[in-house]
Length: 320
Image 1 (cartoon, one colour):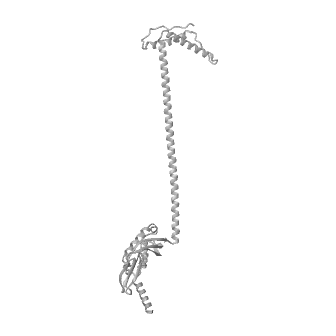
Image 2: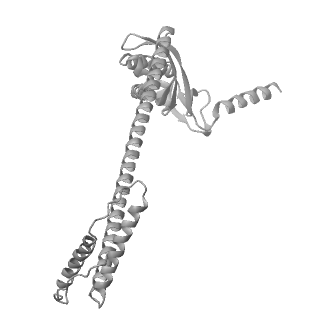
């Protein structure tokens, strides 16, 4: 009975030592008699009991590593409290086992020293603007050194950049002054644009008023010219009609009668005015002489007309 128990225990130990199940995304390094033998892949694996042993176990997943906070000095001698996070992945289990005694500590220290070096070449303002550049340079420097450790550095991210309180107050004052400056510039630009708009509007309004006045003057002049032409044409037409009537038989007598009537009417109107002193010619033959002079002008007009010169006639006389 005792022998069976012993054999059972030995068999159980033998099974445990010989069968290994490796999880997915893991790699186990096996040593045989203290020397590297093989790397176990995910799944079921068999070892020689008491001869082979699993020396190192590595996860092949992406691992985030918190880099401790540290003080960095910028190019303009300003202290910054910087901390970040590093993402890496084991790509070679053998190198990760034998390339460094502790690759995590090595990566952490290298990240800190590289970060101090990169920030030391930048001024304070640039450290806030060039975060992507700082991250890229840290990753490049660590990745080159980590190749011998079987580790691939994927990315590095700065979590916080904390300057001293005095610098924070100065930066806040600078930001406030810059914003006030932008506000003043914006207000002045607004006033400038307002003045430009007002001047432009007044100029356009003045031009529109002057164009309207000009067009009104043109229209008025055109209207007056048209009225003068119409009056002249009407007068000319009336004169032509009078001339034609005079050329007809009895026309001269009619003109004499009309002139006489106008003369009598004129004397009558003058006599009606109580404030007017009327002087009547002593010799009424002067009135008939006036009529005769008018008739001579009419006869002269007829003689130069298209019908040829008319025979001369002595003007008639009105009886006193």
